[in-house]
Length: 479
Image 1 (cartoon, one colour):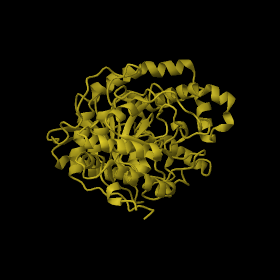
Image 2 (cartoon, rainbow, N blue to C red; image 1 turned 120 degrees about the vertical axis):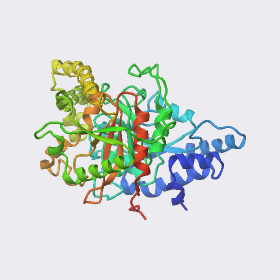
Image 3 (tube, rainbow, N blue to C red; image 1 turned 180 degrees about the horizontal axis):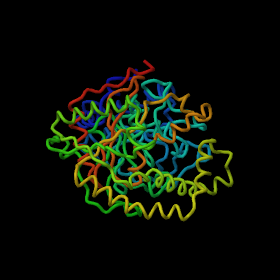
Image 4 (cartoon, helix red, strand yellow; image 1 turned 90 degrees about the horizontal axis):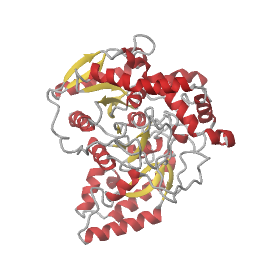
């Protein structure tokens, strides 16, 4: 019989329980495998599990602890991840038909770092096809469903990780973020999701979508868990040419130090017309944003209205050009040889990317440093952290957000990454945090943005908010 109480433990707590031998790794792994086998199909979040290896690894972890040896802070803890992280000779399908039998010859650096910390890799979770989409729809593997209400989207492209973590089927999970694909599903499912600074976490051995915009980060149920996973996977990597040579930081060290006197900026501009925050963001989402700002005030922060630089207006367009051109290039051969094996939405988006000119693409890359410099000067000389929404509208249903069935929703889809995509373009760290519910009963969230390599500040700020609020997860739909 599966142990629901064990499943509901936080990542940090279950790690501590194993370390103190209050529960064995084998018990935890057996329970996790049983929960996934019994319940994951109801959310369509599981791609595959590795039961035999997981049970063997758990036995080894227990024997090591019994002899006084621990590999690290996640010794014996089972985790499952988005189906885009390569492990040598193990299928990595990337939510696609094209890669359904693909067995890479390398292992992702982030997985190796988790291995070194003692974590056990027990499965892969469904995702949007080739990570190209924010809703969670997938014509190849089927749509992942939101644990809060299975009729609604879980967000994408890290749809399976968000659904699994929010429904207690995984203690945490790694995802990717090119236009919001960690933060967006985190917000839709009531989770904490970190998009680190560009270059903070190695992308080696992770499926590429847009090499100039791709970020790797975790989705968890608590701020502490998110900081713990980010600690483990961060660091320079000589085999990733985009990896930053930045000193390692302990994101847990000052987690509880509070935010008295911290200046939190709230944008007063991001356009004054159809692309402005106040025009795009739904009133119900703004209501929850205001509530979260009140919590920050009570915790000792100063809320500072701040206009964003005019150049920020073009970040979305520039990000779309880069993502479109680079993803189209990455898929050029398959688009010629196996076009019919793509889902129709993914294929059309990839083909559209090939229409961008080299001039536009290079201009978008060149402007990146210029826009970032102005943004840092305009914003972070006046405030410490920026606060914005994540998903600009209440979480939509799977049916209404399916373009094939509802072409009229394409206008909304074009706006969904409005609040997240610019920070992929700028490469700034951004953390999604749960912030109440809209009238449909689904979660919403805010994101905190900081200067480069200030993830510790984001975690400290989010933890101050978390301590002042109560957040619960839905009764599981399979109970």
